[in-house]
Image (tube, rainbow over all chains, first blue to last red):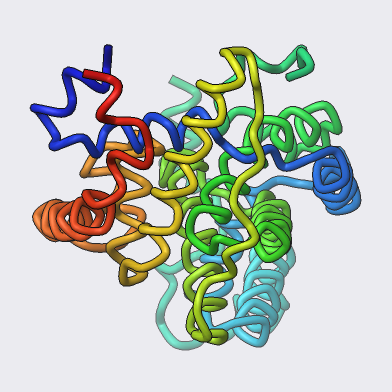
Length: 118
Length: 194
């Protein structure tokens, strides 16, 4: 028997542990029902969760200083995009007048077009 | 235990399914985890009613944390054992008026002979009495190692200590248990087993 073996190996305690394992308490139907009700009540709604995505954006938000940082970053991004798409007339004039002609706002230089034409 | 179509999934996969809104996963996780959590709480506290509260609270924490659970970080059972033990220790520190002795686990399956069942029950009760005399951390380590059958590294993770500290706690706990139980061997039928 297990007890006989363990009496030498473990001075008899294993027999008590073995008895405890056999006498595992049963949670009972009431508790099972309560816990299952909790689980279902807290069940996340399907399709509303993206833990990985939320975590990524949470970390990004923290990195830029919370929601004010996110708002500032978004405003700067939109402004930059808009300036790229539709630069105000004054910008080209300003660059031309300052002698910075090499810094053209034209996204396709004549050199690139020449290369494309072969 | 009733069959669940998700019984082949591991705990982490079930929790991911739960977080995705699957009610079957909720039922499967409850059926699988509640007995472990409840049993651990009964052994730690020696009080069935309190263990019910602790088990419900521990699992409630799991349901709440599920959407943010990071796969691969920790095993669900490791996390649950830790939460359960911490809730138990909090309660023990609050009451500190001595263990409730009327809350010994109920028998589950009386398949062997009545005499054998009674003897097994008596031994389990004696062990429970002795366990309740141990300091909290020794009791936790002994239960996890010798009744729940966890490894020392798993216990170290649950208790947030090193494996050597686990060995030390279990060794001291067992010595104390032996001292407490040695005088009851004849009463518990060990002389007749030889």
